[in-house]
Amino acid sequence: MKKVLVCLIILIFFGCSSSVSQEVNTKVLTTNISPRNEIFSKMEYDGEQILMVGESVNDENSSLYNTSFNDLKNWVFKNIDVLKGENTAIDYNTENYYFVNKKRGYTSNIYSLNKKNEKTKTLNTIDSTYIKFLHVNEKENFYIIIGNKFKNGSISSHGYKLFKYSERTLLDSMSLNCNVLNPIFKNGFIYFKSSKNQLEKINTLNFQRYTTEIEDVEIIDFQIIDQGNYLVLGKLNNKTVLTEFNNGNWTMDKTFPIEAQNLKGEKIHYYKGFKAILANGIDESLLMGFGGTRYSLFISYSDSDNWKKVELPIDYYIKPNLFYKDEIFIAYSGGGKLTYVDLNKK
Image 1 (cartoon, rainbow, N blue to C red):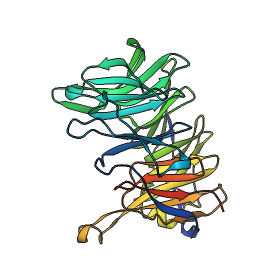
Image 2: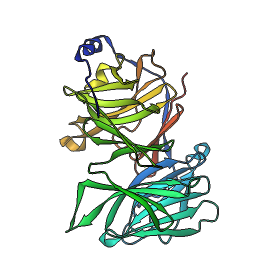
Image 3: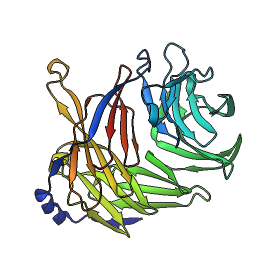
Image 4: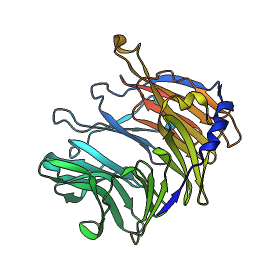
């Protein structure tokens, strides 16, 4: 296990950094999405289509909507009979969407949904396991699920196991004995946060496991710059910070804006040098004085650029949301509306 200490002295540079206001195109889009079901939990982009997934209400079918970036106002509703209950995990490839659909008693069915003819196929049924994550490797003819056993009426957050299947045949399994947060499946590896200051990666072919620890910073979210190098959004001394792990060393982003430090970091996005941070803070004026959460978006186009704050047109309801490269940020904002941000550098 590699342990690396973050040098606190670098923090003195934060006093000189600031955010710069940025004029970007932001707007609210009114769509044809039915507001009858507001329980949307996931938004994914498969390279061609955006898929937004909801949960079923009163034994109705789950809400599945898809569209393209060229037509964000008009979404196609997919009425899939087998998808009732909670869709706990999804994945996709060029031909299919894949869903883990939880039934009563924590029995989960894994389905494929053909994108063209919308026919479903049951790949497997897993009993007494709460499956949180799914990764399908069609080229190597296997899929991986990560979940934990439902036992004695409860689920342990530290009892995660990794299972590797081909159709219904169990190829391999591995007890992780840790939590699994914010996993990224990329280039044959699973990357995830396993504790407040620890990142791990696992080779999906041989299950070889690697651990990287950062002792001073509590990890909130992370992105992969390239294999073995991470960009980490974290918390240090009650401040939100951005750190980079490169060639075995942790360094602070000295340009990270002071305003963002004073908010609670939530999500980080990285694409070819472009960085975006989604953060939130409590506004006591919301909800008739009871208080609520407002979100802020900060963007930087390169390592040498200042950070810019983007004012969101709807800043209190932005889940689920999606970044697309360094071009677009969209979020579902309730009532059939989307918050849209054009990230293209002007």
